[in-house]
Image 1 (cartoon, rainbow, N blue to C red):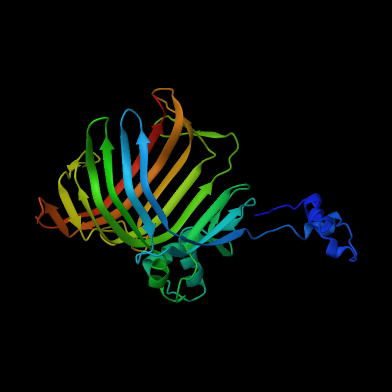
Image 2: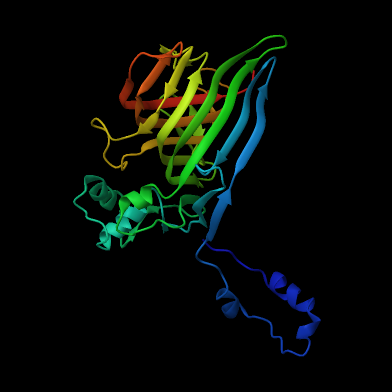
Length: 332
């Protein structure tokens, strides 16, 4: 990342400091000025707690989320998060995904015999560095742990950032009636490496498989996470219009990626990716927000599945994958 400092900005603080009047002040020439150009980006150590009484999307009626809280599992501020922000140079390699694991394995701190580690070494090795190569002007945000514990422990790294998300209820509300869709949502787990990238491709466009034309300058989102314990009441709702879970209570919910055939490269964590940009629908010709290349991969375990307050057994989804998903969102 390169941040130029203009001479005028450098001189202004000196002019405002009378205590330096006796000091010798010399203008910087171009060669000297080049030495103060930053190269390393910005690192933010983040601690935060988020509380929200109500969030609503309002049209003729509304859908509202009540009593949302995001915090550490013990109720204090969500902490131990390190956010790095860079604007890439042409071909610059920056941290991405599980590149830190690959870096440790290359240094001999973690065994490369683990299949996930071997995959990371192959996926994130770029020349003599580990990460992902970016184009000039790409804005790159990477979220990982500030303190990852023992550098020889993958578990310490994967469980370094723990969180709790609580939501009182999600309601559909009309002028006279309302219905609770979900309530008593409690989710605890771990946030894995998360990347937000704004790709700089100028005015270039590309055509998706469904014919939609989208901007090649796009926001790319990529995250890994694990829900280690959760519960909720599913009062009225469907999962992609296939599974009606109305009147269901779920306890001990776990979302991860440890079963089946689709676990390689995820270190036991669920994953979600998506890209967002301006686009034009091939079907309607409407211009709007394109959400494309969406992918979600996880195993889902519901050990206590209640109907009418009584457990009817266990429900599991193995290799649950949503892929080849594209959406065009516009007003009507």
